[in-house]
Length: 149
Image (cartoon, rainbow, N blue to C red; front, side):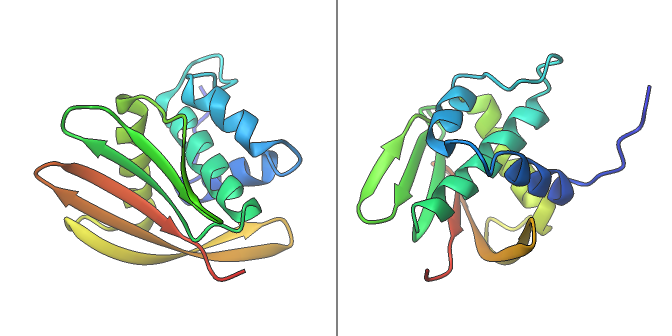
């Protein structure tokens, strides 16, 4: 078995780069339904795919932010705030937990509330994002804030 030494941040950048030539909304819908393209159905790969596609979609829509909220009851919400505020099909609760866990791992944020800048390389450019975490007794939210476009 080959050991993969890439960290989550590198793998996230690779997912973003891989999907730059696709329709991110269609790919997000597939990822939300659990279609990862990974024959091993690795939950980390699906979580990274969804996170990368969410960031790519947010950037392409010139969004102010994207948010994924996982309340204790398990009904996940995935919202985009761009020209308006709307919802897209969210991933399931287990994948959402992995998305938030991976985002926390990338940023090193373990506090209930945190706001951390993240620079994401995209081919020959980069985008400066802010990952905002909010964990309460009611659930947990990951918001990704985009720069002004």
